Image 1 (cartoon, rainbow, N blue to C red):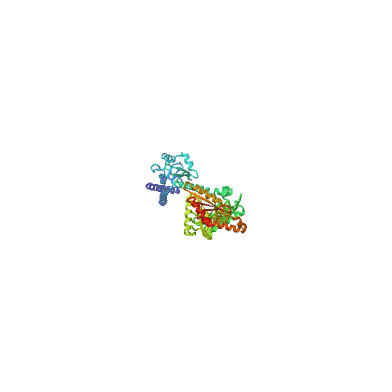
Image 2 (spheres, rainbow, N blue to C red; image 1 turned 90 degrees about the vertical axis):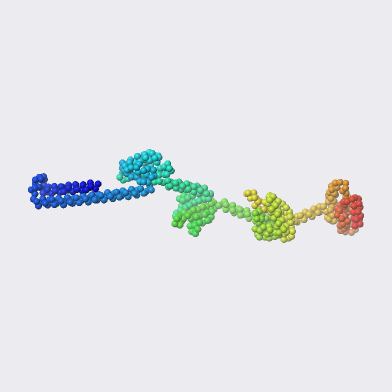
Length: 560
């Protein structure tokens, strides 16, 4: 190429010299100048013409050489530029294919070849673009027609091709100003995978938030507009999500409720921890509702407040139930405290008293507040504590209701109590609580004993009466099951009792009867003695008969 440039330079110089000489001759004699005329020119003029032509030729030659040098520099710069462009394009992470206006391949980088498993030998400059697509189609790297490929790749978002090995390639096709085209091929497999994961994660989180039974909302701190609301929020407010998102508290609630919400938001923003818990009364469609809210400030990577997340729950019914429960609790405590029996509740795990009413203070020998948390061994003496613990364990093993009667030492002395033990089980049917009621039956048992004594004893002499005597006689007859057993019945009748009453009065007569009863009871020495009527007594004596009866009669007569 350099030799050709040099020859072209010399040719241009000769042509320029001839042109100069011819021009000089023409200037000297306009029109046609015959060759013979040159010889007639004067030497001075001819010499001037030759020098002028040489100067012009030298100038022209220098200009040609300069132009050649500049052309050579431009070509070297262009070649360096092409090498630089090729190097840059080959280092791109995207595949690049450039075609001219006629659709022939001008350039494709290494990334493109590696992306579709092609070689430089297969993709040559000047190769038609349709042949390149056909080559990819033959390799299984393209499942579209040429028209479909160019149409889809020409869309603003491009076209995403899924390759057999699972990779995803995003292709974008655009035209250049010179009529050519450039196509970029970007491996977006990882991006699509992350996008799918993000979409899946987003759907999962949205589903979780949407199914949380507590109302969840988020609002922008900048303008206070809601940017998130879950299904529970929709249900509580009675508004659709479309109406909630983008609205402020002033647009959703009455003025008084909106002011309360703004105040809670400000408290959360001003909190050192970035969190604030409170209860708000908010007016909704069905009236005022009490909302238990928990507000948290979400900050960006610079630590600046960005979002305000609010979790709130309608606790109106719960508060009403809580108040009712508190009333019921106080009522039951009042009832338990005033029932006329001692009531205690123990934890079966450690035997500690959990509850005791006012009546239990008698058997606990201390204030109920002081007994709570103590065990049986810490309240009663060692002997009683051991007996009570054994009965408690037996009742827990048996389960259900266990009733027994036993004495307990109190400040007023030993008293008799009827104790009912009831075991309460938990969900696993394991003993959890032991409820005990204690009823003091000391006076009742004494009264019952006196009544029983009165029913079978004479009120004056305190001897068994006729009913007791007949009962004892029946038992004695039933006990004699063979001929060996013997017993005798004696009757003692006092004469002159009526005269004594009449003369000395009934008080003296009663004293006489008491003394007679005492002496007969002493004489019988263990036999049955009863007062059958006013002045009649009955005796039952066992042993060999009639000797035992005669001896008893003799002793009674002697005693009287």
